[in-house]
Structure formats: structure tokens, C-alpha cells
Length: 97
Image (cartoon, rainbow, N blue to C red; front, top):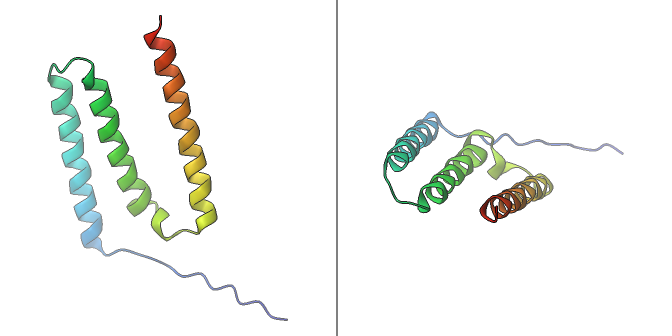
């Protein structure tokens, strides 16, 4: 028997890459602007939310995660879940000292 392993390339046009790049630049400028503001305890939380948005753009567009198989997405999700758990434990330990 002959197996046909067909791999489909999913590529975006240059326009979407430029738009995502401009979005990443805007989010970076927003991060710098938020760091200059005095919003108390929400400064770090806001910076983390903006960083999550930037990492989502990089993962889905530049790393082509949207076009990967379901199994690979599950592995990335589990890795990110452990990262979030590590951050929660880190901030919990830091806040109770």
C-alpha cells in the first residue's frame, strides 16, 4: 500500500504580516505608555494582558499555529497552562511575603 502524506502550506500574504507588525508596534507603545502611568497595582496586570495579546499575535500569525494540527495546538496549550500556573504561584508567593 502506498501512503499519501500531503502537507498543505498555509501562508499569509505580506499585507497581514505588515498589519500584525504594526499591531505589535502599537501594543509595544501602549506597554511603554502604561509603564509611565501611575495606576498602582494594575500596572503589572495591564502589562501582562498586553504581553498576552502580543504573544497571541506572534503564535497565530508568525508561527502559523492557526494552521497546525489539533495535537500540536494541545501541546502548546498545555505548555501555556503550566506557564500561567507558574506565574500564579510566583505572584502568590511574592504577595504573601
